[in-house]
Image (cartoon, rainbow, N blue to C red; front, side, top):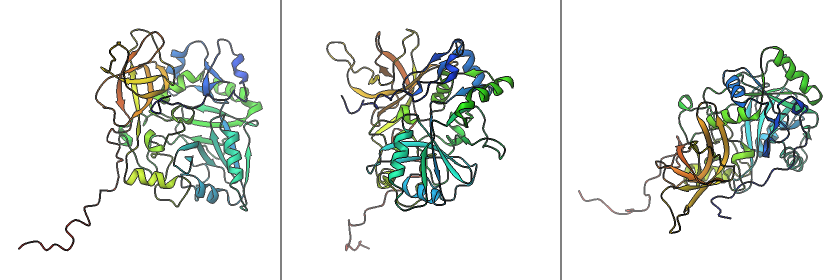
Length: 394
């Protein structure tokens, strides 16, 4: 397989199948969204309801890990990418667990309730994340538990932290650049995700159906992941279960906005984060693709992306520059996708995407700037050795 187009491994089967899949019209999702409904029979109406701020999404396929003990925040601070040592109760953030080489291994939404730190992650990652954290405890006063079997998440289009009388709630910080973060894309107020409201509310898994029913009684329809994923793609929001493969570093996905603190102490992978930010450029970049929908063809995640005009003598598409990570049919934008491509690929040309039935043309909208430089990258130092000892003429 071309290393420019490799994709993440196929996700494991879901640990739980939601009871809401028994609803009339429910169609189960696939890949990392297996176990919950993709839609309930009318995906366009569901997406419109969610975009208007009125809808509830079954997210019970996500994983939940808890960390308790007096050392929990300082310990998480020391081994992950985010500054959480003084995280206030009911304040949401997110973190990454990186490999020693700086590649993304885990991503988690983080909120602390005053006694427990809650980590919300992909369903197939919860067990491995909990196991890795447990191995890193050493003699510290912390306890780690995978509580996915006990807790389920509900998605809401609400831009608010959880109140004292509400269940544990994680508010998505994307795309607002956090203190200590930086961006490889547009300013926060010009970002297409600036108006996307999203939070996850944790409820006892046994009470999932009742919690959803209470929101339906308040006038919110139950909608599927077709709707929530379309709005995520529109917002350029990276997701571990989709945009991350074994080579991904946070710079490529513009994830230094919300998940990485550049001024905190050492942690695993920090050297790569600092080096790429200060000296280098990420080898790849995330891009949004507006797909030609005239042929009613929709590529699958993992489909190769090619430069246009690069045809072989046999008339086949030529050089591949990346791969599709997420695909959605948006109720206003039409078919759209996120893709990871080579940073060196031109940013001002249309692309082609492989698809069953023939290639599909795609206009690209850069997310990570083609030059690969962050908004606050330190200015390069001038020459320090050339001319030393030389006295300029007067």
